[in-house]
View (cartoon, rainbow, N blue to C red):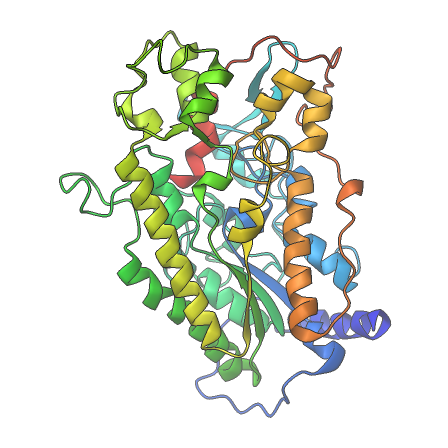
Length: 469
């Protein structure tokens, strides 16, 4: 199967290169291409989505994370030759945030400084030089991985660049979509132009995370006077169904066949270490228990603490109670949970109604992680078992939301297992044990002993969630 697949890939790539940069679809399809079958089903794999698809890691996008993005790992397990699944590869120090203290300086990915026990920037780049980070800028067709960090469901079809993204100023749209080179086409239209026979399409996470990471999620009801920062479920369902149909119909109208789509649902925020149970945070931060210190948060019933924000607040000399922006109250936690549940119900219904679409239950997979081991934040583990063991244990990167290299291997295996179960294929699983994550980015761990304490600066806390603003 792999030999024939490589031949198919070569033919597909040659066809794409021959078309150059013209993404205009014909007015009426005159193609008579038969529905792909057998190995041809996997002949042209394209991925679209947000930061999770892009390989975003440690608060930024850089080759170190992109090398093990779950789409790249899937392509490798499918037998794609090295370099045939092209991504928008970014050079060191990568691109993360402008929360550096200077709006004209962009921060790179985060790295762990073992000498201070805190995250810091791997490096910075002048904003005017950010385009030079893109190593694959001259690739003549849209990328195989079209994941754009920060993309929402609306952005999939509406955003063309940083000026049209739902969160204005998102430079990742410029780097990934490279408009106007391709005629000012959205992620959706570039995906359709590539004519995927099979695609992964994972979106919707940012429609809830933007509000949750702010500390004050709002659907227009909880805080009527405040800005709405959650996509209402009543809008999400129709938008999600339209996203799937637009790809299925768009590829059929342009290329003469309907692709297979593998999507995933939205994990609960309680499954990622960025949001920490209040009792656990007390222990991690070395604070007295509830009986000794009854006034702990401004939101007295807050079940969740935004871990890095709260640590940065205390590290900067802040005193208790924790500000409302660093916690989620019971009502806010309920709102976010209900929103995720509604999104996932809509996703399940949309998938069930379309025979070409299949679902990976990412929500269940993350919920099964041990919050004191593979599901823990690196900084928490490093304080107890040492940074070396912590890096080998957790599946999350320094930002506490995105996976590390090993975590992306687990995600890839979830998609591959879904493909095998749905299509009867036997793609091998990724050897997660062979993947390594180095949060120091080559600097090293020093003695490798557990740090007595760790801290987080406001800049690092802001960098960890910048992509959701």
